[in-house]
Image (spheres, one colour):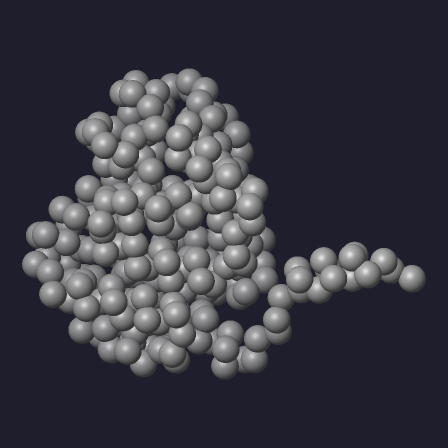
Length: 255
């Protein structure tokens, strides 16, 4: 007979089975997150009313409430102000970079292997990116999660839970409305453990592992950094991924 403690622990790890409608709603939410966390170029700017309507139509949930808070702010900003804020939050601050493998591996050779493994995961699932962004860029990971479903599709999000927590914390500390999409995403993941919380605190204080591999730093340096200039910064982002208009039934995210 299995000991009671083992049975209880196993039951807490078992994911609740989603209905087909719940799975579809979750996929739409992830796709919306993918779009809203992309660089706010002209195409995304033009889609703002449709994105707001899609968020408003989501079933009630903590994640939907967070997205509603975000699109109210997002829809009321001037395009240039949105672009400046996005660059400041995600390109110039290491603690809120959207390149997830950075938080696990920092400036080490292991990061290259992690990127390769992520690309292989995508290809094994029959999904090819267009090469416009690195495979660990959060909007790309979110699009894969939407396509792959709560099990294998969302596995990279669960793997990078601690990095997502740090991004959320950094955006909260900066007072950025982009904290809302990150908070919405975290409601979809298992609750953090004590070990997760301790690891995030350590990551915030010390930064990821460091190993010089010839990558050049980019951007400016200031508040919210892990290390002085000359150590590591995430690679320069590729040109913004093109996005389709509002996600209704066949919306595309990063390809």
